[in-house]
View 1 (cartoon, one colour):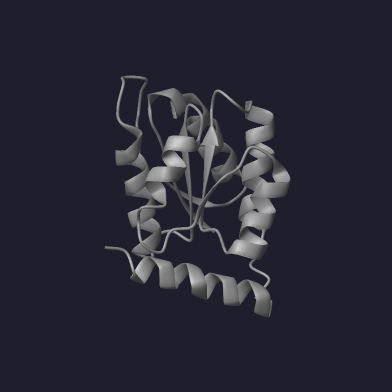
View 2: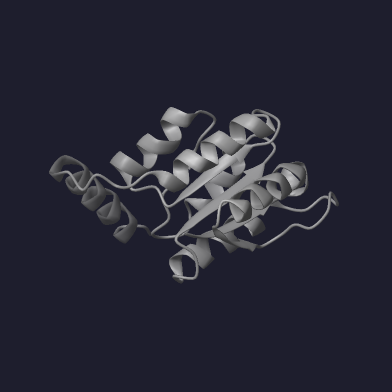
Length: 149
């Protein structure tokens, strides 16, 4: 799978770990930065991942900041992105299976490397169910995006 990943300064170390883990598992990883712990703004990195996914250059996206909250909020401003803040494996797979999530946001100050690795592995292995009720709900989400002022 083609995966875009990025982080702000708080998520830099966890991003590096996850990028290595995904590459070792055979995924094609696009690292969109940041490349050190110099303070940067998480919306820039969440947007870079979201735009890469929406352009079709990645199948899924992962963004890491201190809590995961800000990165998720920023990513979800990109039309077509469905980014779930995932700090557990259940959310990681359910967000894809039921909500067709194409991105997740992780908090480096919330989850450790081992759990984050499990979350990412499960997120990348999950598939949208395609069930009618989930498809119907996604159509409603798309309609909300179309009505944005």
